Image 1 (cartoon, protein in one colour):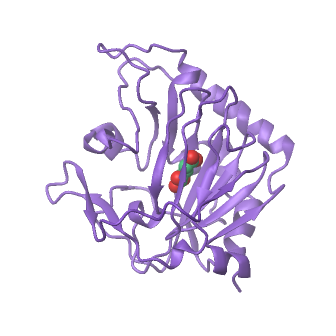
Image 2: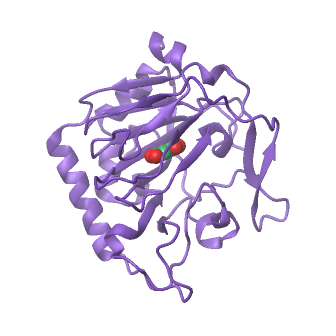
Length: 278
Ligand SMILES: O=C(O)CCC(=O)C(=O)O
């Protein structure tokens, strides 16, 4: 049975879900991944404001890869980095949960499986993973959206599991959510164009979300937050000196249909929490 506060609010905050020791392992692995990343030749900026990434092959083919996306403003006109590469990234996505040994095990560990159970998932499949950096003074805004807009299923089934690796506060750009907003009709769908070369936003309702009623979801390291796929959420730019590293895992129901024109494509099957070889 679904947790009642999740039913009511559309989100569930689980403090101390992941231990300090595990967070240390995850942090170390992220550091290694960025150490090994060669920024030459990569020029894709991920921004929820201008969506320029959405015409980019590097982004469109990243659903079953591990790819690195820059923050806006960190590259000069010739594509050279203006800041240290460890400070330059917006995110890494979107298949660490299948392709990286540390993340493959981590994503199939008890905190995520228990959270999926708590929100009533019956046959959760691991679809998308992201490391979200929100580096000090560089990490950009994430505009209000729902995850169903980006990871559409019929019927709606996506749940986002968002983990604070660093403390997330109002100062460094914590998540904000609109409690109960998961009962509003979803306003848009991000999907591939018919020629498959780009993406477009299909808009069902032009009205913006209300300005009132949003709540900050401040979180200590190790806090896991489950977000209903239809819940509007957002985060501000990080204008502080404090880093706000986070990890997200998005799961869908195995029984739900996954449309072929969704932006995220995978050659890999989306497995459950009990997949073999973990
Ligand atoms: O980490 C953030 O600031 C936003 C994450 C988010 O919106 C998402 O994973 O859907």
